[in-house]
Amino acid sequence: MKKLLSIFGTMLIVAMLASGCGSQKSGGGDVEGDTTVVDDTTVADETTVSADDSETVEDNDSQEYDESLLFPVISEDGKWGYVNLDGEVVIEPQFDNAVKFCDNGLARVKRDGKWGYINKNGEIVIEPQFDLCGNFTDNDLAYVNLNGEYGYISETGEIAIEPQFLYAWDFTANGMALVNINGKGGYINENGEIVIDPKVSGVSPFADNGLAVVKHDGKHGYINEKGEVVIEPQFDNACIFTHNGLARVERDSRSGYINENGETVIEPQFDEAYDFADNGLALVRLDGKFGYINENGETAIEPQFDEAYDFADNGLALVRLDGKFGYINENGETVIETQFHYADSFYDGFAMVIHDGKIGYINEAGEIVIEPKYYG
Image (cartoon, rainbow, N blue to C red; front, top):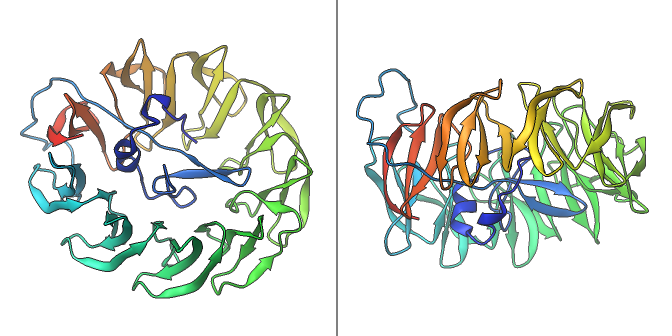
């Protein structure tokens, strides 16, 4: 989970632009960006951005990019549309809000207070009708909120699971989804059938290792896909296991990590701790500063930053130092100077930027590829 930039707490447009297409993180702000489930609530898990005075880059032959990529921007009259890599308007600003396109070629857009989906031609494929909606997962289902209740739709917009839940989250790889039933978290299959009753309330989706966080009598533990408790509730807080088989837990206001047997492998010692990224580094906060540790709990990058984010797939992490944002590599070396008023983490090789109140995008070299000229 990324550290939420509090300075953007009131900037809904920023939270919306940052929303991505993660498998277990969905929604943001109002469940419209990326989120992580903790204690039966959704917590915003993305923020964004800024830029410097660099000139528009005209030749990017050194890097190959997906030319079909479209980027959400906002016009002077407050309407959202999409531009391509050349900064050309492809979908005219017309929506009240809009987020990035996902792998299935659909993007969520908001019009007249309701959410729906468009394709890359700007055509409405699912009419705006939902109070909230998520991205489609690998089983082609997306959660939606209709008249205050959550259910699921297919990519054709047909109701697949009737809205009936207080909350609902994305389906995970095991074909289960966390839903709130009568105030407690249970799990359903793709037919909408309850497969794990909320006897011990679930508070997270299942991780790839088949374990999910549950809460009982104020303590957190883990269950398997049969609903059996495999790690007794004992932690003040707990998060899902990541790819390396470690999970963040909290005891006495200190954060550490356990393995899949429930054994402590990194003692709770941090003010805050976050999931390990694919590069084996995790963001931690100690004595008010952010740094990174490795999977042995050893300091990899000294705590020194005022704000910091998880490493992206390109091996760069967004950090803030002395009021400015920039990027470091896995050695802790600054590769894009801390110079921006705001900046977003990289996604698909680009990061959204805001300069002089206008939105643009930079590449991994810190070069502006879409000049800031759209209103933020």
